[in-house]
Length: 394
View 1: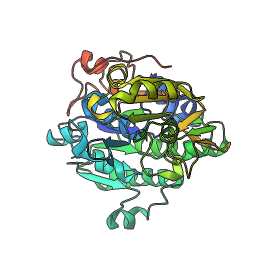
View 2: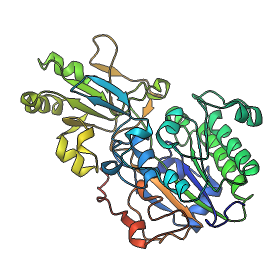
View 3: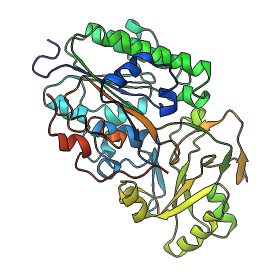
View 4: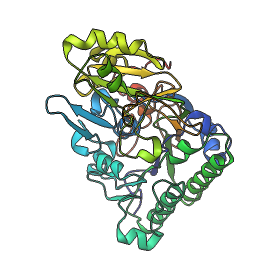
């Protein structure tokens, strides 16, 4: 029987790209009411403000210094290998979903993106992906819409309702949407509001069908318009620094979202080139700051073994990545929107119906901190999780 021995059903919503400006647009009345009734707060996302970093941190209730997920991609300078950070084997600790499953809960992950199943889906009772949908789900709910559409998010909530209605064994649901609509539309765009209303309705329908429920909501990052792209690798090469590798922290292969361009980059290069590279990049319009490995890891709660020799921080209007041909600089269309910088950190955090201590959280990764398989643990754990400290939003 659902919830027997483990308490109320848990619904965890990781709404990709739901910056605070989207949440406060007025398009999500049901969730806004829970935000007011429950432990609703405005908190900071982790930097890099990209999905894999923050999704792993929320699901593990630990910062990237603990999870080991420091970007969407990872580069190994010793081998020249570049790989996506989207597998459970790359996590340095299990997710709460996996731990809860081992402790008696029955957990389900529903996500638009196949990479989230690979990263967070190990050991769960059920996983559903818009990119890797099984025949039984497609037959019951319908084939998933294209990943580059708002419709796939509506489909996720149809899947959630189906799972709630047909799988009474399941008591924990982690729903991860896609931020494609946020890449397309500003918060005040009527198309954006229509999308958010549909998501809000989907949550409301499921929530009102369950007699006992806890709702947890946060986001991995916000979204901003960007006007300029810089290829840092080409810039360094033109200045005589050969062999430097510049990796956008955004790179995940979902190029229709953002062209793999993001508001931060890791740069890998020889030790004797570091000082000169810092001087070159710090002078570029669009670069706010360049920091070394250890300083970056300490300031932003990162694993120093999984970041570059240098971290490059973009201003609000700039993104980094590989550009076509010989281009070092590109002007982006007025419709281009992305994230990854320090300017996409403000996100909502909501706990409703839970027994967690209501002390303010400071960061999104603390959403589930303090929860065990059955209920809440100590308030101190709920507040800081025992890992690191928050940093000020810039």
